[in-house]
Amino acid sequence: MYRSYASGIPTSSGFADAESQIRDLSQDFCTAFNTGNYDHVAALFAPDGVLMAPNRQALQERKAIERALRDFGEAGYQDLRLETTRVDNSGDMAVEVGRYGVGIRQANGTTVVDQGKYLRVWRRLGVWLIVAYSWNSNLPAASSDFARENQLPESGKRPIIGEDVPKSA
Image (cartoon, rainbow, N blue to C red; front, side, top):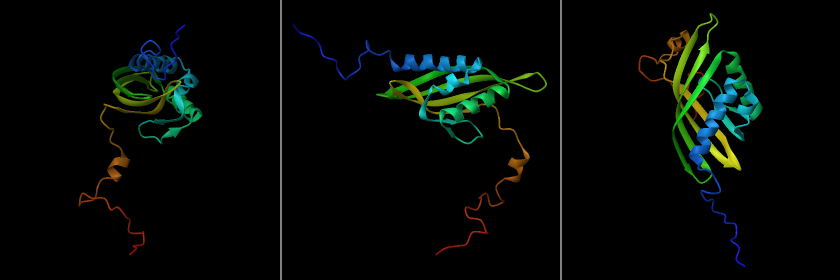
């Protein structure tokens, strides 16, 4: 009697397509964040996954990512919406490009809406997990004392090596 053998090549019947899975996982990300389940959001990251939030150090490790997401929630970030606009994949790697919207509750009770774009890299390790995640806002950068203090010198170029660094041959 003939029996087919298991092939190492995934078929459409064996796996849902990567784009559908990643779109579903993005919605899981939103739901978990919006309900304060930051541990669930962090579990969507690979063990070596990296969260690269704007104006912050890159974070690697699920516990550090969970704490950062909790900090965003406690700072008033709410009602996160993600819209995947594109998913490209090859084998066990995928790149997701999309738009986001999020409300940021202010101390005075008002809510500011931030919108922007994001990029996520996914790896299939049995399941799809986030390897790297970064986003940035469409809002104009706020001017600050720091920005004014760090303007480029008159020549338009910032010195690469400071005056206090000894010169070598």
